[in-house]
Image (cartoon, rainbow, N blue to C red; front, top):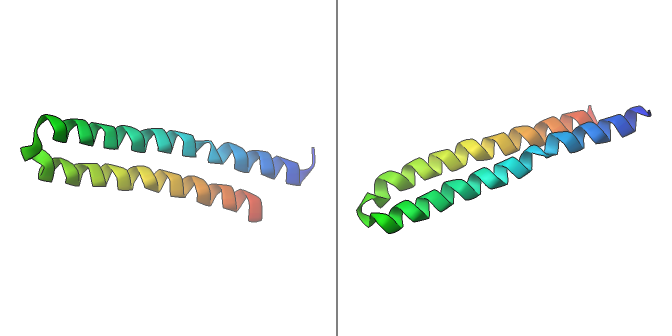
Length: 74
């Protein structure tokens, strides 16, 4: 197998993590909407936690992209 082909396959496998990130972000905001719909008074407390969860989940996506770029270009 050519080294370029192996790098392309490795980068593609690293990007598979983005599917999990999309599902995770969807779950976070679905839970936010559900909790605010059930108890609107808790919006301020729950919204901050949802944004924190979003930021941490999005960090996983950025790490996956960085790893894919390192595999491709280094």
